Amino acid sequence: MIKLKDIVMIHDLRRQGLSIAAIARETGLNPKTVRRHLERGLEAPAYGPRAPRPRLLDPFEGYLSEKVRTCPGLSGRRLFREIAALGYEGGYTAVTDYLREARPFSPTVFERRFETPPGRQAQVDFAEFKTVFADAPGVVRKVWLFALVLGHSRFLWGRFCSGQDQGTVLRCHVLAFEAIGGAPQEILYDRMKTAVLGEDADGVTVYNPHLVDLLSHYGSAPRACRAYRAKTNIERGKCHKVAVTAVMRKLIVTANALLRDRRTWEDRTADTAG
Image (cartoon, rainbow, N blue to C red; front, side, top):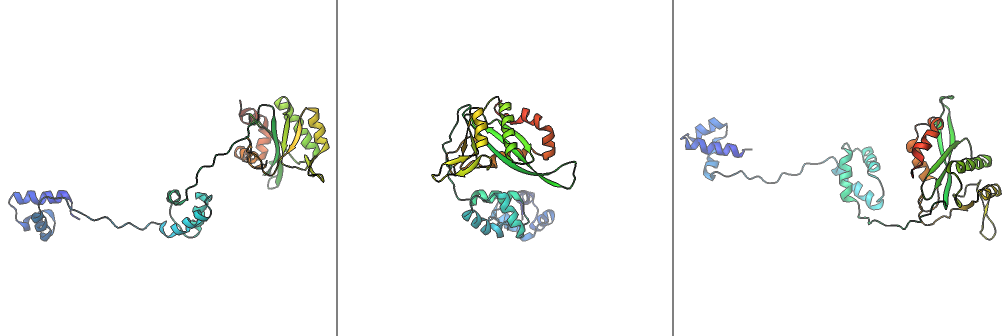
């Protein structure tokens, strides 16, 4: 492929009086090439567009397009793993670049959030963790995180427990109230058995009487989450443990370490309103 500087040299050597054969020897070009460019004059060489090079992702674009069409919520990381299992040897960035163009447009849906004033509401739930303690290497144990989250400030108080029995639940409530300096007007529960016993013949929620007595002592009352409700500060839909678990899993290295350092974590991290 001849470059513009070579064409300039051909014409410069010609002006110096060199023959076509001499110019060819000087530049290393074929004499026919030298003659052709002398006849054309001094002009830049014109080349057609390059043929696109095949990409490693090309064989998998149809698969990705079909996936995001039928399941738009699939993450790029998951789709990358799927096509890697099918033989894709390219990089992750090439996949995400393609998915940005291939995903169908999804308009943002804005939801009205149900906000609670200070002292009005809290949410209680348990999150399950499996861990290995230092005193028993190799033995996987299950621990439970009792978590109380204030609806307005999102202050989170947590305590790891070995179970979810009635006595443990009541003690955790008392400790949580001591930590936050009182009790909210009502506490939401995800129909946990130690809080909600079920419904009577008229569909009225029946609460655990021991919990009701404890909350009444502190001027509070239980409330069972419905299957679907307005989005609150804590969760959308029903009150479930996903939000609490997600927050805590990011902070946990092992449950044993957090049990040892729980007070430090509460003081520095859990109080997001401070």
